Amino acid sequence: MPLPASVKPYSARQSLNRLLNSCFPVTPSPPKSAAQQAAIPLLDLSRQYSALRTDILAALERVCASQHFILGPEVEALEREVAGYCGAADAVGCASGTDALWLALLALGVQPGDTVITTAFSFFASASAIARIGARPVLLDVDPHSLNLDPAAVNSFLRPGKPRNLRALLPVHLYGQCADMDALARLAEEYELPILEDAAQAIGAAWRGQRAGTLGSVAAFSFYPTKNLSAYGDAGLVTTIDPALAAHMRRLRNHGSPRRYLHDEIGWNSRLDAMQAAILRVKLPHIESWNEQRRARAATYDRLFTQSGLTSATADAAVRILTTSPHAHHVYHQYVIRAQRRDALREFLAARSIGSEIYYPLPLHLQPAFAYLGYREGDLPESERAAKEVLALPMFPELTEAEQQWVVESVAEFYS
Ligand SMILES: Cc1ncc(COP(=O)(O)O)c(C=O)c1O
Image 1 (cartoon, rainbow, N blue to C red):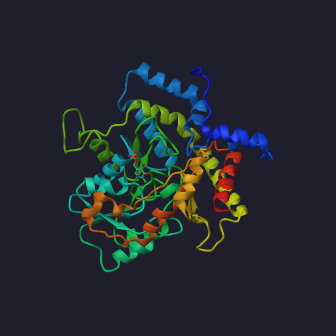
Image 2 (cartoon, protein in one colour; image 1 turned 30 degrees about the vertical axis):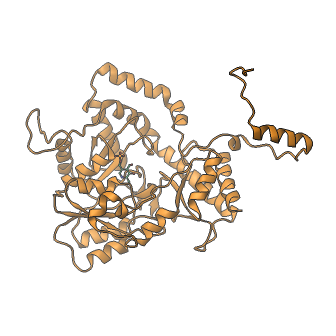
Image 3 (cartoon, rainbow, N blue to C red; image 1 turned 90 degrees about the vertical axis):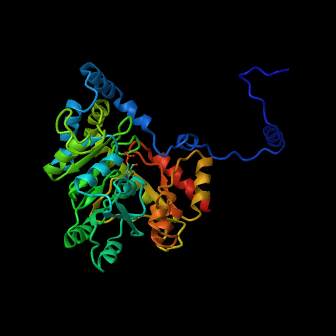
């Protein structure tokens, strides 16, 4: 007889388990905490939304009532507020972080045939924005402790002489920690190269107390929904210390147009819409406290991992924690460990519904799209090693200590 839809039939294994349990009762395992029972996602935006729902909906209503959907007062206000927050002279909203990089490169005068130095260990857009202009990314290796662009690698590249067509230095503030801006700024000055910060993961981060977005000539931010400051769709922004660059980028994001139906040069449609700007304006006043909560969660992970005994200082430790520079104010867009048997650990965590992610499983110099650059496996060993070892663990301001304990206990159990 068919079972009612609400009743799930037992599988053969479940029936066998029930039979065995009734014949040979097992000592009950200690009760699971709430965090152990529930899934722990890598990022849970719904917790943020429930706190901000009323304000977000009011902001959307404000835009709908204005019927002004593209650029306009919301975008201008956001630009002023983000520039003020970062301490930049100006900011230009655009369609995505990828476009922010592209606008910044164009404003710096990068042209087809030029070259730009960046890191091999980042999201694809850090290098593809260079390639999109027809310029050539020079991909260099990372410092194994921070996984940011290694100034020593930049120095070795430049020491024999600056290539004639080299136009800019594009460090990425990976995972929310600024690259070594002392060393990179020294090199930029010596070789007369402007710095474009890829600050997509680093709003609120700082180097020696100075915020990302003001550490070079120009900086690109992403407000992709997973970022520390996130929109409800794609959105990006460029900050700059140079008002002339800002004016140029404002034209470029709107078809190179200084005024309606006049086009001085070929730009593109990379306009930011008012809905995204209005949502970002609701969230921006919270970014400091959210970043502080991320920093506190990171300190908790560091402590729990140290207590677990997994993170000895030796290179063969099961888990290694990335290093934070004493000069960096890290905002932990991601909390990333280097783990032995990383892929098996990830599967183990997934079986417990603990989210994790690999940023990034393939370094940029080995991406098929960049095969034409001619790099080979082995060329950038630190980036290649990192790609095999890194694992991002759940990290967001609302993550609870009980959840973090369960994550670290689970990692410890995997290695036990
Ligand atoms: C380092 C880095 N650069 C650039 C980007 C591109 O930003 P978007 O996804 O908004 O285009 C991202 C975002 O994913 C990123 O993490």
